[in-house]
Image (cartoon, rainbow, N blue to C red; front, side, top):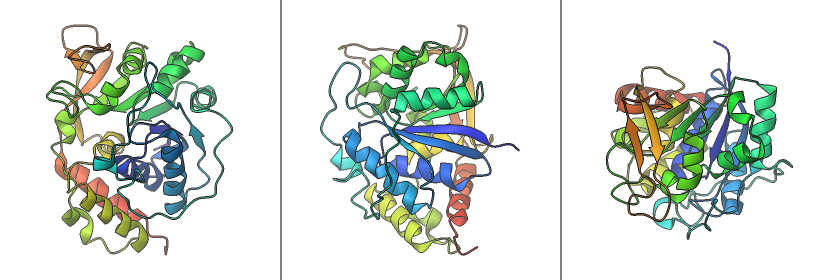
Length: 302
């Protein structure tokens, strides 16, 4: 199986941490070309440094980190989401500081350059607001035809988490999400309707002993901080590791934007020409198997 070239576009972020972990651990599956950052869970300065620190923890500091937008398309970021991500954006867990430099390309330029290099093969795993992608499509109109697909953790086919209708990543920059869903790039949307079914509990990882203790300790601390809730972003990227995790259904998905009650709502219609595959079910045990395998792969003694 050849490696899949990917960029993770992210706002680290507790559940983003686990997404990056999977991208690093499964190096036989992924050719992790870059991390591109966006604010949301915290400021872009904080999320960018978090990305550098996470890569250092996983001994993948060779992966470039490109800083993204400092605001959403049509509004400024809100206050940091301390309740769900802690003061430092990483559940207040301590991770060694990385002195690695930020890539000299901005996020949208980095995405474009990698798309040129891997013409037709690059996959963007978007687990934050989709501001960087929308800006990339605006600057490089040819870019959509150069991407294989976008895997999105966002949206929901049921109830949201920031409103009755909307999930946070889509809600915060609904204008960007609308651009992305209308771009023509094939999209896999993994929403709250499936991710909520797979909480990540301490017991799932606790008995894994053949792994780096520092990494395990941080992961267990993050799980405790989130009260053993789902790590939504990890589920999105895991759908690329095993075809048995997510059941998809073809749909035409559109995003409601603007200052309206249903802002950020992701509406999936099944009787139109599809622009996406939306997640409708999850094999929870297969996902847990992947997470346990991920932790075992962080055994640097081997």
